[in-house]
Length: 141
Image (cartoon, rainbow, N blue to C red; front, top):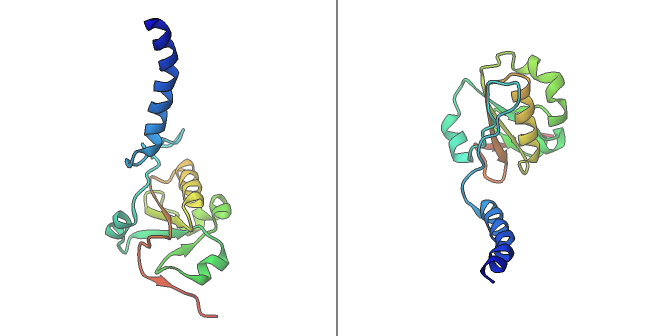
């Protein structure tokens, strides 16, 4: 009888352990991109604000329309689907600190991983603009 209970409880324990990982407040472990010397790092807007200096590139990977509606001051627009083709011209120094953000965090993660794959070593995904990393400015129409 004890063996039967253990056999039936084992899948339940595995399920609970898996769910606990999703409920954790801890950030995801960094994902090391294959073939790169850098790793994927997700940071909070507060950490990003602490990193902002003259030598930091703030990369907005949203669309032109989203950027025009409001973006972080001094951010450079580079839509995430154009990263591979245009990043070398915008940021030739692959060791430059790059803070990447978008609207909700999906595009910034994709862009950050692509930058790492391209050999950029100091890439930080800030995620979405919900919690801004700096002053929001709008383009004049």
